[in-house]
Amino acid sequence: MKKILSFDQAANVSGWSYWEDRKPKEWGVITPIPKSLKDGPRLSSLRKQFKALIEKYNPDMVLIENPVGGEEDKEKGPENNWKTMQTLCQVQGVLIQVIDELKKPIEIISPSSWQFTCRIHAREREARKLGARKFVEKEYGLDETQVVQDICDSICIAYHYITTDGVDPERCAW
Image (cartoon, rainbow, N blue to C red):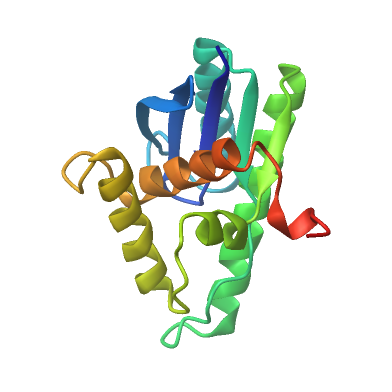
């Protein structure tokens, strides 16, 4: 029985899903406690929660999403995207550190890879979010009353991994 823990780590709400035998068994979100935490205390809070989940489920593989630059916020300008990217990279660094500390194998999945596997081909962010929701609802029967967007993304990340046997199409010669 292969156990997988998948994360869609983010600055505010990180979705996660736990899988056994290629099926999602549990899912949830991680947020800084309290939500108003900034900088170091925010990362420390997230670190404790990431570590607790990994220790609880003791997965054979941990999946995380590779952060990529998003679209420019038309109201807040390009500096908002830069700040978000910095925070995402900090959260990813904390998560990778915890995974390494607990000696778990890790796969970092690009958004374009899991979106391709889940047949999400939209260009706009909102359309991609909707695509992930629709995919999770169709594939697993989970609707928006059962899972939030960040959980949908973590499910799609794990689906990509299990259906491609961990082979990222972006790193293949075919």
